[in-house]
Amino acid sequence: MVITVIGLGLIGGSIAKRLKLTGFATEVIGVDVNPNHQQEAIELGLVDEVLPLEEAVKRSSLVIIAIPVDKTVDLVPEVLSLASDNTVVVDMGSTKKVICDTADNHPKRMNFVATHPMAGTENSGPTAADSQLFENKTAIICDRLKSGKSAVSLVEQLYAELNMNVIEMEAEDHDVHIAYVSHLSHVISFVLSETVLDKEKDVKHIFNMAGSGFASTVRLAKSSPDMWTPIFKENAKPISDVIGTYIDNLQKFKNMLDTNNSEGVYEVIERANSIQKVLK
Amino acid sequence: MVITVIGLGLIGGSIAKRLKLTGFATEVIGVDVNPNHQQEAIELGLVDEVLPLEEAVKRSSLVIIAIPVDKTVDLVPEVLSLASDNTVVVDMGSTKKVICDTADNHPKRMNFVATHPMAGTENSGPTAADSQLFENKTAIICDRLKSGKSAVSLVEQLYAELNMNVIEMEAEDHDVHIAYVSHLSHVISFVLSETVLDKEKDVKHIFNMAGSGFASTVRLAKSSPDMWTPIFKENAKPISDVIGTYIDNLQKFKNMLDTNNSEGVYEVIERANSIQKVLK
Image 1 (cartoon, helix red, strand yellow):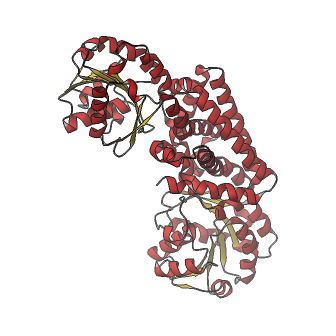
Image 2 (cartoon, chains in turn cyan, orange; image 1 turned 135 degrees about the horizontal axis):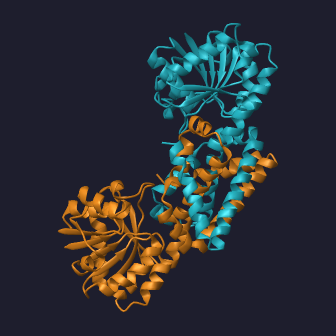
Image 3 (tube, chains in turn cyan, brown; image 1 turned 90 degrees about the horizontal axis):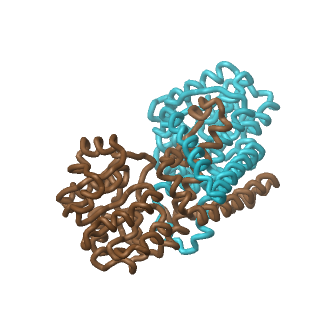
């Protein structure tokens, strides 16, 4: 099957690499606005060739869109319009409501499947591509009933090739849950980095004193602003709500410290510990 | 050299294991109030024998205190009083001011060295012991001039055996810096865990949707309340101040989302990214 991957960054590059490896793609065509990424993707063997959008889409049975979510909103209708009646279009965006709302108005809505593979690292670009990135992770298909059966079936095959477990969810629910389990973590990490860098003017202190705990909590602060600014824009309301709740809980914890309430502190930590039953 | 390790948890157990391995200790005596930990430490070969505090201290040239910081405050004067004039006592606590203030009043203050090895994991107990835990990490010696030269020299040898880099700092400065680069990360993680567990009543959502980003940010939430409650108590003021600054920055970020200020969001992320120059 000829597959076009639009956006040759961490996610698109990793998918391209994996689908060539498994043979699911007989040919992978890359599309990217960044000439450096085009060249790197070819040099790394992630794609067979790079073509302009229109030519690539017309030649493909499956088009995978893996670009920042604001660009995805613009591109989904454009790609659907260019695509043949049998071509399936799937996106990989971290927010789903705005993208689905836009796609809903398109006459070829049935050809589109809205998804979110829950995988990634703080690195970006074609050089970050890793064919094992998705191994045993979860992919979410949103608003499944708005997609055609054969389109969903092809996308399920795609995620089987990536060894991902597929779950389903309404786009709006997805955006609220993901605000809690992904977007909030990124806010926390960006703002932690900012706070420590602001305060610790002498960065040598950070370097010398920062244990592995700090490194772990601040890891996501290395994530790309080009990817994350659009996510924060498109999912602003749920994320803002979640930050509000988080601030309230931090304030309560701060009050416990200020009033020497060690019992309360102990209880918070004990409750927090139970996350280990949920995560490995 | 005969060495007593008081507290056979992650830190004490790892030190005991390492010092036996390198031969720095000809004999390691363990002291622990928890009978299970006593037994595990012997079974795992972390210590040669377990003795009551007084007997252990009297037989040792070096006594390493690796217990929660509130217990350390109580124990430092007791151990100093029990110890011979040539015995060196060193503590491993994550806060330093309260411990140093207490030690300052003791006639054998010169025999005591206040330190903080910046290493650890979210795991605890003798089974978590790892002889490589300290490799290339930083150890901080506080208020060095209040310790005798030969005591400091022995503690420097100890940290050389652990392959740690030693830096020096006043106890009060230590507590402020460490609030930023370690204690705040733990607060963030505990409160994140609490927030998500509160909201996501159906924990299956967390399990299915949580990517590696969430796991990384919430890792420290598994840390022990017995260790961390005393740290939050002893370093309450600096930690409370840091949480306040962090809340202010989160609130600013939230306001950017609420006012659709994508430019501001982009700038925060860009600034946050520069942490990668400081950390590997």
